Image 1 (cartoon, helix red, strand yellow):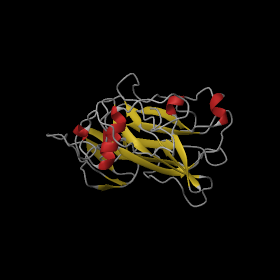
Image 2 (image 1 turned 60 degrees about the vertical axis):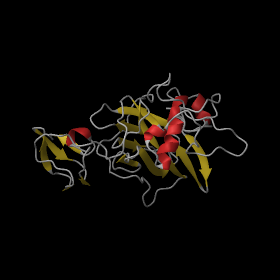
Image 3 (image 1 turned 90 degrees about the vertical axis):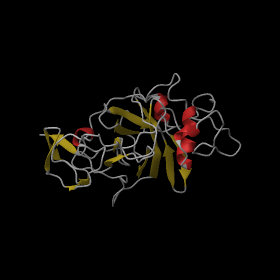
Length: 278
């Protein structure tokens, strides 16, 4: 999806349904608030600069573009929103945004798995430095605390991510930084995947909204409403599982990969970062 507010690479665009929806979500209003009136966008425009918001998510724009996984993905990353640990060096970066369905409804309980290079452009393949997964909240929002990635040979700066709504296909893509010299020479670079990035004290703040190729269901609540007649098995919501636990769900056996407290919407087949068949 295009940057939340502006990307310096294209002409200004009119206020979109999704920009109005983001303002409504941020204000705690119900989704049906959206009409034709202009609402304040989540990010502020710079002084003297107009605010071209994101394209609509259903009028000629379509879902967020996919990109290659690359050679450095590792499954089973830790469940965490903060990738910065003791000894991490680099420019602090916070990335926030929303995940929408193609009908502009925010999606809760979406699995977002991030990984990136460190300040020197290296990927940790022996551990999980600068790797982690999280889930969008009840409003479809996410926040990632990390650092600006270093330059990897042949590539511009980027952050990898996999996004998966409960029970839906996985989107694998990358996020890019505006104004990078290597954007023009990186064959994988896609301007539609630019974040909106601005300075914030000694660090940076980025925003980006994903649009998945699924239809969302309007209304408040958790990640996924439990079914009327839940599948049989030993898995239950509200239970504290640890790595190595075995459960069954819908007559299929699963192994717990990461310690977590279960909740509706995180059933084993919906969250491959937490459960593996077998």
